[in-house]
View 1: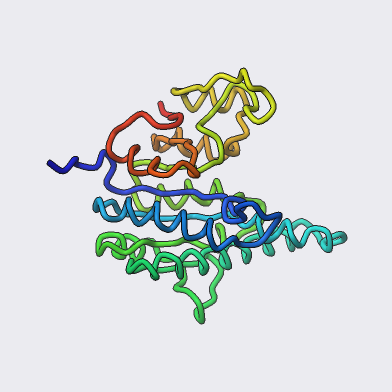
View 2: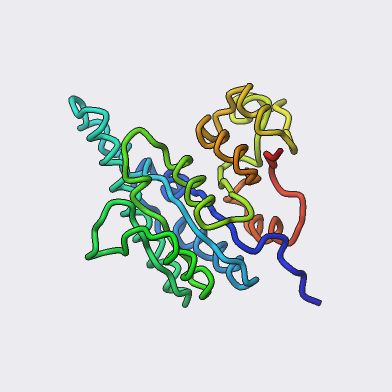
Amino acid sequence: MEIEPKYRRVLLKLSGEALMGEGMFGIDPSALKFFANEVFELHKLGVQIGIVIGGGNIFRGLQSAAKGIDKVSGDYMGMLATVINCLAFQCALEELGIETRLQTAITMTSVAEPYIRRKAIRHLEKGRIVLFGGGTGLPNFTTDTTAVLRAIDIGADIIIKGTKVDGIFDSDPMKNPEAKLLKLLTYNEAIIHNLAIMDQTAFTLCRDHNIPIVVLNINKKGNLVRLIKGESVGSIVTN
């Protein structure tokens, strides 16, 4: 008997650093393939999927040469880096036979559609995975905020934030082996404690629009599917 997915439409937020694998910057083909397969398993359940990917794996590789570049130009460089990651992820998904669309907030019609909300929703309804590149198209906004804005626009049931740890902890689990996993938090708790898992603007937008956030370890095979099937995975931030 097939289990009905707990969530029908999701927004998956991946960091650019996740695509580095064991490297220092750039895109690791094995990491790209792993994440594409995880999304593929989700797609097979009939879940509608939007994806936002950060650009830190590429922009950080440039930072050593970026001295003297002003903040606004640096933000635009980061936005362009997200498009590179989306193009790579799009190729990995299409190799698995999934139909995709890439939409960007910065117009670049040679490689992607411009971001149009109604068109994005229509793609999702047709079973296509939609990748959102180019951030918000404006400086001073993170890809976390971009992910929340796109989730609001497409009417996502949940935002899934993929990280390299098992959820939200009361201290850094990479430094403190005694760190305690927090399975359930409210938006206000996340904001008051200034949790670094997402920025404050993103948390506030989720609170105001009542969109739950699940933070999980994206590197653990099957975590996405377990979440969608209703298992307790990672940490959830909700009202």
